[in-house]
Length: 47
Image (cartoon, rainbow, N blue to C red; front, side):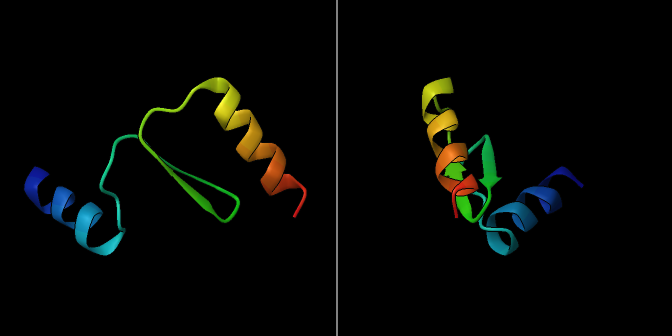
């Protein structure tokens, strides 16, 4: 089951890093600083 979930995440959902977040229309891969996340949230909320 675990391998099936990993295959789905990688092949179908396009997840290649952990964590992967979707903020608005932007996909954020890997660990980001709070400042970076705040900047992305601000940019996406202005769209």
